[in-house]
Length: 138
Image (cartoon, rainbow, N blue to C red; front, side):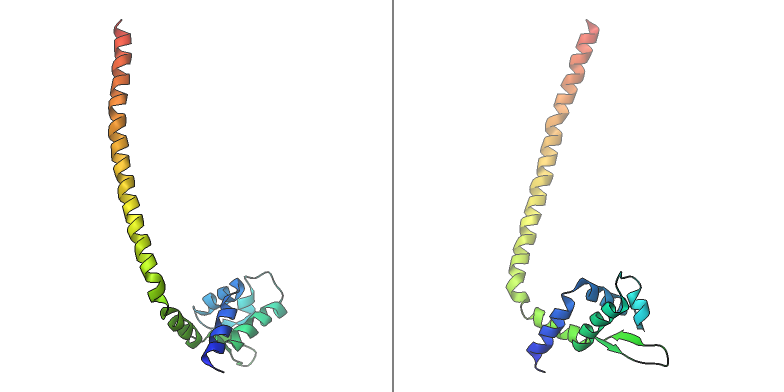
């Protein structure tokens, strides 16, 4: 199978949130199919279908040890996908850098407005207090 098919299978497998959750659990260590199925409200055959998709993509490996059928994460396809994405970083990083600069400018402008508005309100509060004192003296 060529690299493009591997990537297509990897991204197709990662497109489903249930399969991503299964991978997240397997990142903690190998576990049984029944333990993987516990948090999901679906039948064992449905979980098995998800595992088959992950296995075909090379993202997991399943074994057999007597009655125990452990699953474990296989990192190579994830590394290949990350490498492919990394090649395109140069296209989006200038936009991310520009966004970061824009957000920094907005924070500075916002903090300047807060200081200005705080300073502008302070005299009004004092004048209200002094008016109420004048009324009390009359």
